Amino acid sequence: MGDEPTSPAERGDTNATRRRFLVGTAATGTAVVAGCLGGNDGDGDDNTLTMWDHVGEDQEDPNSVWVMETGDQFEEETDTTFELEGHPDRLTEKVLTNYQTGNAPDIVHDFSEQFNQYIDPQNVDESPLMAIDDYVGDLPDETYEVIWPGVTFDGNVYGVPHTVNARNWFYNESIVEEAGYDPETLEPESLGELEQLIVDITENTDALGWVWEGGATSYNWYYPQHFTRTWFGTEYVEPHVKLQDGSEGLYTDFIFEQDVEPARLADAEVTDVEVRADSDEMIAVVSWMKRMREEGYVPDDVLTLETSDILTNTFANQQVGLVFSGPWGYNILNQHASGFEWDVFPAPTSGETGGVSGEGYFIAEPGKPLMVIDQTDNADAAGEFFDIWFSEERQKEFVSQAGTLSIRPELNTEENFEIPQLAGLGSIVEKATFYDGAEKLPDADLWNTTGSVVQSILSGDRSVEGGLGDLQSTLVDRYDEALSE
Image 1 (cartoon, rainbow, N blue to C red):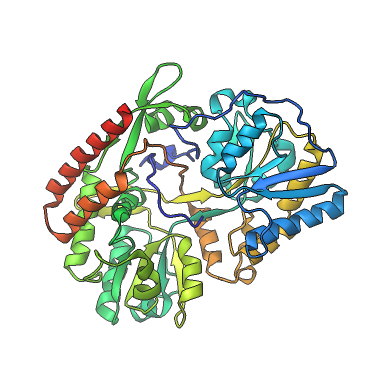
Image 2: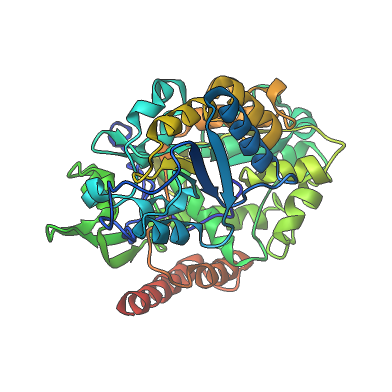
């Protein structure tokens, strides 16, 4: 997905044998209309299949063109009319409102973070969604494993994500080769190996080792937060939740210690938030970033660089060899940077620094799910539409036209992409060790609070320990205020 980073709220367990895929539904969310009219017959035309999404018919949008062409093929093969309707604003709200009156579309293609608005994991049978196991066929065996946990409840599938992505490190091939590495096989497996690569780039080339995004923005905090999960398996924040049976505890303790299905935690009440900003792991990571800057391995202006300049200027102009970013960087580099060869490798998942060590994880995130509303009079037609949508033929056209990963790994090859490095992202998704879904925390001003404090820490205005202690106190106050509203 090409989204800016969010503030996740689960952690992976440092014991690899206990790691699970966590379901991508919001712990603070509640299905909007669960149980309103589930299972009622709609008044739709049984010879017309209607689909709503955020775009509709738009000849300028590659994704929309692909959907319309998929609809054309569906009409040819089934003699059923396909109607596509775009709702760029409040799509979820409009679908659920129309569901209450019996006028919802047959199929919906909505953002993954909205999925929990369609289905209440505690009352699955009363959801507006239809179980579509009969439609998915062999897809679970033919696609990335990571896309399924967030759409599966009580063994039944209620949507199929359309794509999948992961965070990664970008590297300049010529620079890493000059530093003494083979760009074809580059893949540091630990923080130690990554740091040695950074040092070798800085000492053996005219470039500096790396730069992180967000130096001049409020989400500067995101990068130490992400590194705590990739290297140590710990998260920055975690909600305390209360389940419907009255039991309370940390969200991940329910998953890892009590083996509660993540889907059953999706609408748990958030009663408090534990902030681990002053944990040993967080102090070690921020200290590491601070040392990297003080010892000259990152640009002097890393704390004032605009995010948009990181890839298009600092990285593209070969001032640094590495940058940690996400899939949104692919099209930026493809459109605005030329004159050098670049590729990607996954985030290392082993860390040891500042007296702290651990095994972590990195995330892969599924994109928009395709869902069927249970009021449809066209269930058989919807099944045929799914067959065409997720067929190898149509998915191959998708990766070619949209420049985005298919959920079918075999199609994510260099020859199918305008941006050949996307194939590397496909292999990173296959190696992902953790699935993280939508935000699970109360709405509070986390970005600005943490960004300003981490900025102060990294710029040397205050000690690491003192800064993080202030951050701990500030965040707890912010969340207490948000939770009491």
